[in-house]
Length: 132
Image (cartoon, rainbow, N blue to C red; front, side, top):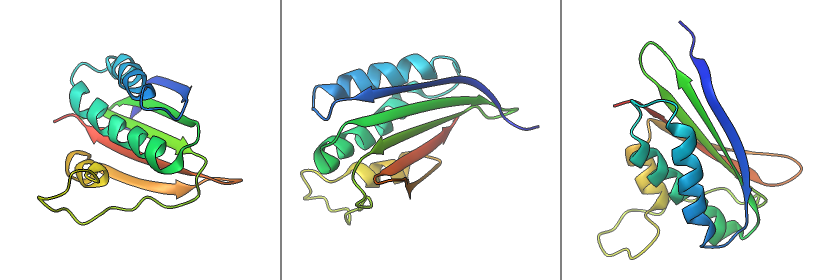
């Protein structure tokens, strides 16, 4: 059975640290459409990608959230699109790191993740999380 899209929303955010709280609230609201999804995990990973957009791209960014119902599992897909063409860089994990855990965390928690360039410039970094 192919997955059915049950919720989708898209919102633009300013490249400020204050926007991160709004991103988490926005994502939580959309993901609530599928109760079986781990909303906290989806919000955590979305926050990491949005924080990367704020810190590294420094441009307005767009967050798109899609929730699919399949038999099973339910899947959340979150995309963060910014205007920087620079690819995301995952730093080697180290216990001494004070920051830079973003993509390492995404890789550990998400079911899948990746990125694609988008035109005319910029990129989309995305992840999918299936119900546990």
